Length: 103
Image (cartoon, rainbow, N blue to C red):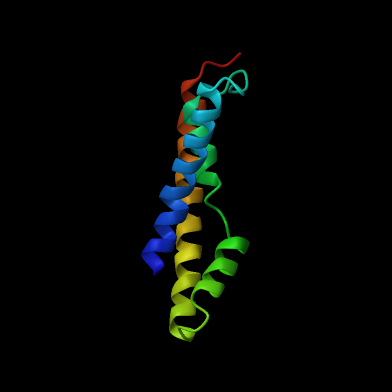
């Protein structure tokens, strides 16, 4: 449970966000903002993995009859996944922004 929730936040959110943006850009319905690239969007996707409220709410609903031990596991998965997603997003954006020449 904990691993699944964590992976959903760390892997699922970035993949969903980048894939959705890619589809919209390829269809010509939108374009990336000037100066932004796919690495920027990937970093933002990881930052989107910082999702406490809905993740905790959905976890509580999904496992409401499972008992208190699983409720703790859900919370640990959300907190751990959010912390990893925040760290990866920060580092990815930091590295990406350092590589770009200053104006």
